[in-house]
Image (cartoon, rainbow, N blue to C red; front, side, top):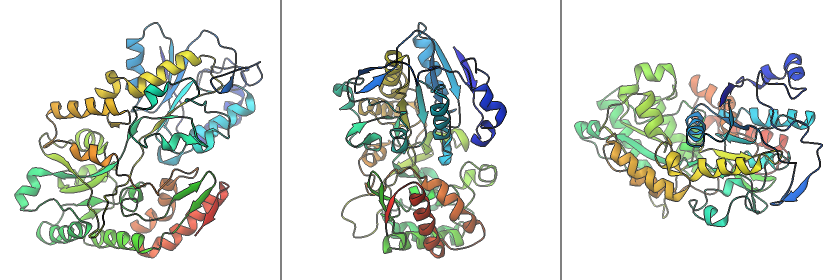
Length: 453
């Protein structure tokens, strides 16, 4: 097994020197080449696509830092399989690193990884047209396996009725809260957004410095605006999107955030920032956030002690007749149609998305594969870390509002460039909603989408 690390910046890897390094099959300084000349070799149509000649050799797997453990565990459990594990940024925050590299590999006819993990759910939207992702439901993965993924989990992987990736985990949002702190202050968990706002106002007056949420991350709209049914990102077809950020659904959630930001019961630092960890880690009373916040944020980053953090359903607006929540990431696994090790790649793909050895027992987030999610929930309960059960996560897994899609453009990147700087400068989110819409429209059209406003 070899482990390699790619530069996190696409711009730094496309210089003349690196291009020359990628020109041949000996290019191992930055990554392992697995299909030298694969773009021009004779092919055999099988499993729904033209496959290049298969051969022995190491299976190249690209993962982010969090999924490194999965690849290394697979190697330990399958010592007969040679792995070259390559670390990259996982396309975090919509970096488009993978897409940029695939474009390069397509030009040079070599270099594609066999299997790759992405923290983004929109990779299939470009990877099919780029002739990178292999179809998975035409013979590679049996229906008996695909049918056991949670309902809707693989919708983001489906293009024109064909499945091109597998969902790693579900990142449905819930309301995380500090149970003993809430009890100490004499508060109850809010069930409506109106109650949530009122609680934030009370916290600001009665316990200044304590927080009911955070609006400092680029995925803020995926937690709040998505849950509030703001129609900012409704993908209506393969190349069509509806964008409306100034509807009542958008303005009332943005207005809620503005009130809590202004009275400082909502942070604008970002949960992974040094400032948040240093000054606000022990001040979190409530925090809407995705499933992976339980481990990645509260336990591992903020170091909140055991028996404090619990999960409740995300609040709903009064009068809403069906619960809705947002989704932050979750990640997908893709198999390259250029792979010269398709059998080994498929076995890895099935294992990493469905096997309890990783998904049920080790995965940091709520598994997309339903049997593994059941094992995962039991494991979380047995760990003794949480103050209550995590049944809210199971319920929320089927409550993600479906009218916020996964287009080629990154909403996280758009928010980070358009809205986040304004929040830092003291501007209200409501005042920036028109600019947010203009930016979404610009990005969508630049990616070939027909936009309805």
